[in-house]
Image (cartoon, rainbow, N blue to C red; front, side, top):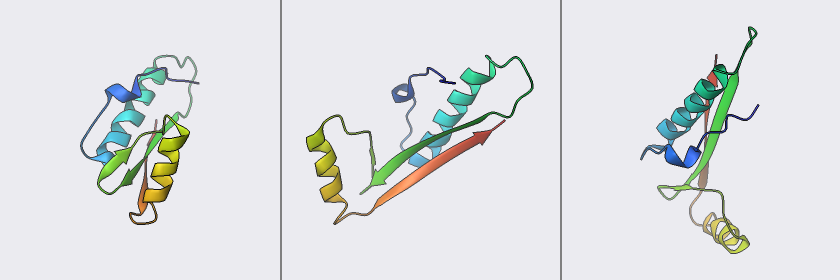
Length: 84
C-alpha cells in the first residue's frame, strides 16, 4: 500500500528524527485505510553525508557528484522503522 503523503513536507535538522517522523506519517496515513486486524510496518531512509541529508538525485550528473563525494566523505544510511 502506498501512503500517498508529501514526504518533502516533513523535515527536521536531525536526520534520525526525520526518518521516524516520515515513517510515523506513513503509518498514520495507512492505519486509516486498514479494515482488518493487521501488522503494519512502515519505514523511511535517508543518506547523510558531510552533515547534509542527501535527497534522491534528480539528475545523472547529481548522482555522479554524490558518488564522487563519498570518496572523501563517507555516507551514512539512516533508517527509521515503525511497527503497529
